[in-house]
Image (cartoon, rainbow, N blue to C red; front, side, top):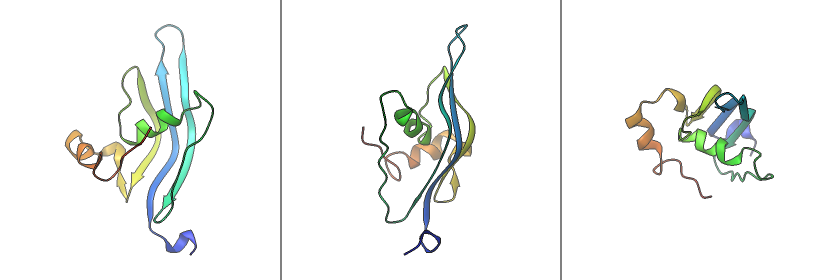
Length: 102
């Protein structure tokens, strides 16, 4: 079955996550990642230590803590814009609809 006939579950487009290092510059932890996950697919993120795997997944659940922040991009889960959900709404998604294993 082609992706065009499968339901899109996750869409990450242009995700950028930066950390302000207080006088030492800005760390660009994630700089423009795009990915799509469709129903029935399994995704594993693999890469070298420090390449942004954890920051990407924490962003998806909006768990990036200061001094980090999502500076750009779209995070959509089953058509919901995760970046525009309020605190209560994102908590309902965490663990129930989206979970991470590290």
